[in-house]
Image (tube, rainbow, N blue to C red):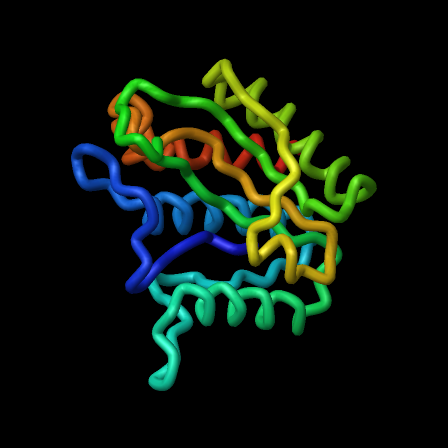
Length: 179
């Protein structure tokens, strides 16, 4: 599991200051607990608020490559990166569920993405949503079938408010688990 962002990289920020990094970590920790309770061996790229910067390289590219390196060293059967979106234009009335699967994998990554996307759409109940091929660094560099979830828009105030609650993060973790 890869809780996106962390440390110096806060990700999207809600209108009331909730950071994507914090929400991603909360959801991923709850998902880890669900999976391990059922016997899965789960490795997380981070389990605290941290980044993967080096003294010689403080770029986002380095951080993303290090996440991929750590995950691949574990030889995972699946790679799931947890995220929450922001509207690039700054709008606060946009909210949808997006799930990305590894661009080059119309097999297992697509199937995993489709299953997780259906479960997110059914259980988180945002309404609009899309399953899309993704060429994000963590997907592209994964040796395993890989997906990246953007279950909602943190810049949509009602969603931001809900995601401050542990029970709503748990609901999202359960939806990804079901998928």
